[in-house]
Length: 216
Length: 251
Image (cartoon, rainbow over all chains, first blue to last red; front, side, top):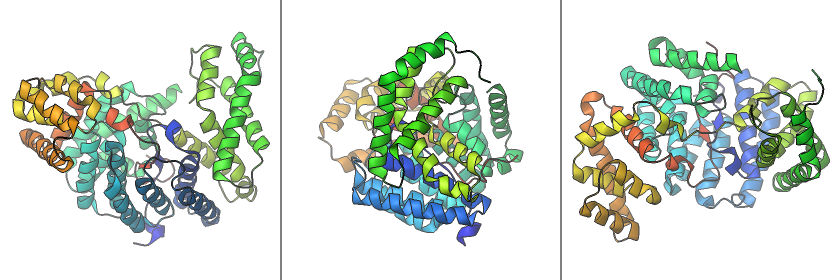
């Protein structure tokens, strides 16, 4: 699949205060790259690509900017940049390397969840289901993983499973705020708006988001 | 929009100089030292200070919520200093591109800033309605041995005792198994296999409810047993992609 035809994505983290300076700036640059790709803004993307290359070189030169486990962190960050720049197949392969070194539930959640998300973006939902279950077992209460799981079930032809996951999230939603990972995903995940026609619980979630945004 | 300065604002600015400002200066210098790039640190500090002023004016926002005191607001800005430094860096590093109108300046940067402040709310799950029911279902359907194994092999070692309690896995042999796992008496690979088999068995118990519904039940009981520490226990870095996007979801 050509990079221009692959859907863009976005990056969040569970706690922004725990990112190192380079990791934080890499995340911002990747989000800018995803936006530029979504808009087809190739000039901006070229600028951002240079910035990402410089940041990644610094990250590697510093052996992970103080990360306690650079063997995992470096391929994980590299995969994030490859994904943002549209080379999703390379991002999957690099993240598979990171997953081999993922030694905590959080790192397994991040790497396996990212692989699942990227497999969905290139139209391989059955493989995505396998990885997302690995992520879910590592982090059973992770909202991003649950959403990726629901997308994978839906795309793999299991809409009832997807509906069940969204129903769980719809119960959770009233306890969350406008800057929660759930609200951010509903705002940015284009895939979800396509699925909402078939999934009543997902429509409930969008209604919740509308109410939340009207209040803020 | 510039109304008279309120008591809250006067109190906040009294706290800002010099302590909070120095904190922002240090955060900007530290960020720039690590990421490099042709940015003047004074410009970053100035941008961050302006952002603080805006946040104070436009409450509530990602950092200063409604109903906080000036002291609490100052503390929140202090905690968010690294994030403000990151935003200041982003604003200046993209300046040239924006001047050349190659980027949808304010919208894109604001979207990126908003994404950068997104955080998980791991405690929410345990406050959710229905968790107790799911927990009861797991207790009722899973055997004592299975509950003991699920608890003893839970990835976060310091949460195993709480999960044991939540699952009512408190036989002597359950304590013994947990102690053997915690002490390293059992090989890591053995523990990993036991965890995988236990989770699979738990899923099989709920097979009639749907192929993947058991994971939801597992999530519920875990959430009831501990406040999401699997998500928040260990890491500094990492992407958490949520899916493909066309900038903002269009419905």
